[in-house]
Amino acid sequence: MAGRQKGCPIYPPEFKQRLVAASCEPGVSITKQALESGVNANLLFKWRQH
Image 1 (cartoon, rainbow, N blue to C red):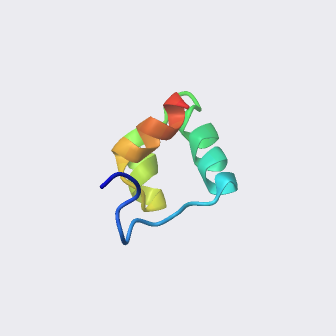
Image 2: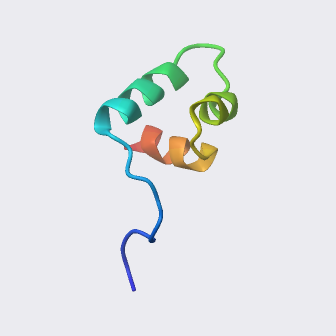
């Protein structure tokens, strides 16, 4: 079955944009940024690719 897994949170677009912008700043650790924001680092990497 394809699609979103049950229980996965849906993040608002504004939250994603803010987090991606913050993670693009020089010297920012993407992993640390993700942990501080409560998202998985792999998810933040995926958001940055889109």
